Image 1: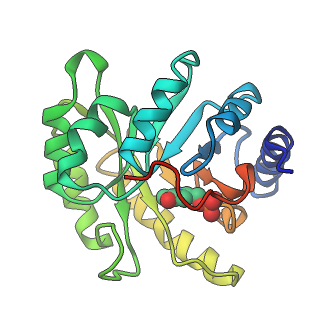
Image 2: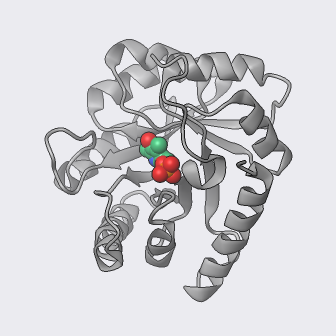
Length: 234
Ligand SMILES: *Cc1c(COP(=O)(O)O)cnc(C)c1O
């Protein structure tokens, strides 16, 4: 049996301990609970345990869940999956944050389709340092131009960077990848001092991410257990 409440308590405690260990001020690392292919019951349990930030990868699944969870208005919805052009309207209308913007065309569409009365959409630029063709994300060298383009769009607020380094159990490699991202983040902050979010670290590598400066870790299986193989996925 997965005990979501206990997992959240334990993860929150570990985050506070890691902040202390690495000299990060208390509360600088926030928790994003990644609920793709997890049940409504588990998300409710997470919300009852104090989780506010919810991450989803698939628009249709998120639309269904948001409707079912409409009685918990304090939830903040983060889109973290690859973005197809034909999904931007739904994403712009449904989410509070998008972590996976990797090209100007998508940023422009999100800006144009964001309902003005909902306020600006919070944006992180997804960076793919390993520059694998198959993966989403802009290259480090293109990130600066994309950040500038986003900063000029009135219905978007540039919040920072997101990355998913190659999964590895090699802790030194985890630290190296996250430290490259942290350096890029800091250098972009000279042009964009209001950027405050470095979204990096998942269930398997969040300790290294916190050590290197993450401000938001995205935990799925560590909180909710294994994902269901298919749940209304689009
Ligand atoms: C699924 C997913 C996560 C969560 O992964 P876990 O290994 O289950 O913690 C985090 N970030 C992104 C972008 C994801 O797609």
